[in-house]
Amino acid sequence: DGGITQSPKYLFRKEGQNVTLSCEQNLNHDAMYWYRQDPGQGLRLIYYSQIVNDFQKGDIAEGYSVSREKKESFPLTVTSAQKNPTAFYLCASSIGSGSTNEQFFGPGTRLTVL
Amino acid sequence: LAKTTQPISMDSYEGQEVNITCSHNNIATNDYITWYQQFPSQGPRFIIQGYKTKVTNEVASLFIPADRKSSTLSLPRVSLSDTAVYYCLVGDYTGGFKTIFGAGTRLFVKA
Image (cartoon, rainbow over all chains, first blue to last red; front, side, top):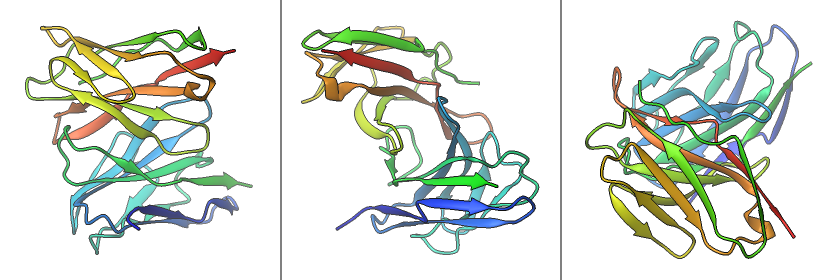
């Protein structure tokens, strides 16, 4: 059963701690994305990767880091430098990175900073 | 910088046709327009995509005028389950390609 998974579904973090959100896909997609969504707001792009071992900053990359060592995995680390990390985080993938490529989204991780 | 502008919210009744318009004045010549639907606490899902004129699938139609500076998503005979946020998406080629989701349109369908 092909798809994109994110874990955990809910995550709680103390201020000053780094935390890593998992994103895995078995769709054999080259491109992967991380978005942040705040309550009542749209999606904002954090990082994206068009191919393994390559990634680019999106509009709100400060305080976040990513890696793309394997095609199927694109973990996102929320560092202590991110001032307001409480949000809903969505991972997506697509066959390629052009605008014609449909993005498939995971179920999301809701991060709360205590 | 490519960006989209949509109405913040719309209300409708069951059985009506709903049209949501998106402005994308700076769309690139080779770019497509894509619409997504999002339910609360879920990831968006693809609805429809087009380049010009009209595209229709089993759930929606997409109308794109010749100048491509706007597009209209048409949902025929909406039901309560169509209550969701609808996003218009275009590409941004500034410094390398990436996708831009706007703020979306919150559609509320009433009985």
